[in-house]
Amino acid sequence: MKLLDWLKKAQREKFAICQFNFSSSHQLRGIILGALESKAPLILGVSPGEANFLGLDYVVWEVRFWKEKILKDLKIDWPLFLNLDHAKELSLIEKALKLGFDMVHFDGSNLPFEENLSQTKEVKKLAQSFKALVEGEIGKIPTVSSQLYSKQFKIEKSFLTDLREAEIFVKETKVDLLAPSLGNFHGVDVDFENPHLDLKLLKEIKEKVKDTFLVLHGSSGTPKEDLKEAVKFGISKVNINTDLRLAFVKKLEEKICKEKEIKPYKYLAPAEANLRREVISKLSLFNSQGKVSF
Ligand code: G3H
Ligand code: ZN
Image (cartoon, rainbow, N blue to C red; front, side):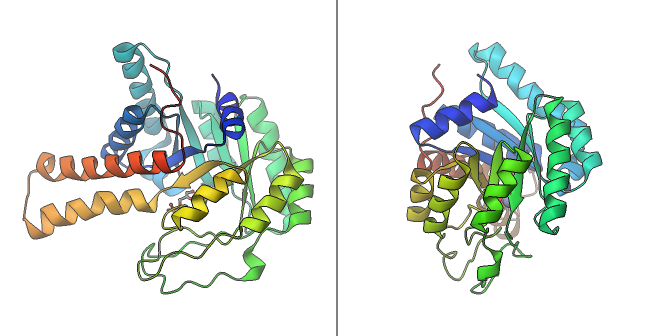
């Protein structure tokens, strides 16, 4: 089954496919093993920063290695997809498509609306020739720079996606997926829970954009009841990064800083295991466990 079919299934059966980002082989293995254990479909994401660090071709090679290994060991064509997340440069997008990425997220949210519209259209045209899906974005989804210390980060009304713009955007660009701004932000607030999502706005956007799949960015730290409601209201894909990084780093800190462990396999193994547990817990939160039968 292709990614498009999986998104349709998610929409029909009211679950969300998780996109987990990674920037190291150990994170990737933790994610893969967690999703396999949960029998869940999986989208792997790399932002331009993550992709440039690893090398786009290395990312593709490593993901392919896992797909082939799973096919060989378990005899299943496991739904494992790859997305270039928050890409702003057309050249990087083209490179990813040529290498075989299943989807690309063009983030033109910082551009004036008309410019975002025309560049997204261009990306859609390009992606179509590679049979890849495109995610567009309108509205502002801020990033807490440290990803940790937001100190009651303030979401302004002007950040939120405009309903009318959302309608025009999907109609004109024909994107397959849309990332709206619903009061979500990238990173977590360690002092307070992240702000609530504007679920009313989500419901209204879903009514306007109909079959376009909706994506929730910045899902780390968001109140759990909001995440569950968001799936009921039409979110079909959720992007998670910071919570996984935190699970990984927490164990590294414990092993390296407190226990003074210096053997990589002794500090990386518990970090990977902790990340894997976090993956399993996220997958169950979004009802995507048990969707792959083997
Ligand atoms: O595109 C990536 C995500 O939106 C991740 O956000 O780090 O808050 O989980 P997060
Ligand atoms: Zn994001």
